[in-house]
Length: 230
Ligand code: NI
Image (cartoon, rainbow, N blue to C red; front, side, top):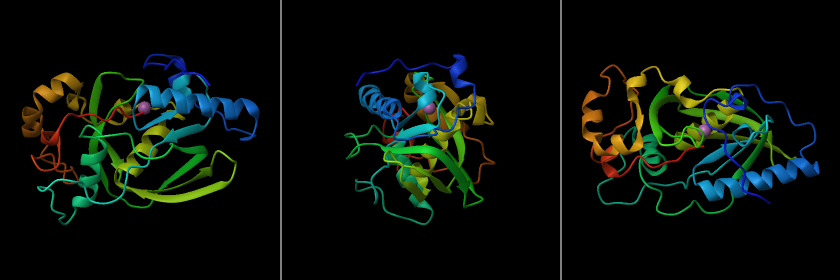
């Protein structure tokens, strides 16, 4: 296996539509997925899509965040806090350690929203290094595809799990997360966002009724905006 070079925003491979994989068991596909695993482990982050390693094929890998409430005495569960809690674990807090187990593999994925609501949350991307942005995503989705053995996968996902799958699958259609942002004033360098996170909180658009909580308990204040995303 090998650690592959990651394409950055501006490379044409990130703008194209990736092709379906005809034979998930083909040796070159297994090798690609193995290399993607190694590359993700090396780079850190929640997930990786094949176009990010210069292969315009429809396969993504991603970590599913652990279930359950976040640790910490200040984070009582409350109504509507589920996504926010996963958010805090997944996108706005430095992961204390890598999620257990290898990343999930999803070949030829198809996503369908199963909730109308969207919420905004912080995302980063290995192809957009150093930046973070607030991105609206569907709060709940169903996704289908094939696993690394070619077996059918069908799952529902919410919160950060849903977010990371939407982010990674967007890569297969040439979409990077800034292209999903209605307000590019909420795109910034992670170092600056960390330094001025309270100011950003104050400026958060008032009209976003689905905005996740970003107050001291759940959001930016809890730590660095750390998810490297995929
Ligand atoms: Ni990405």
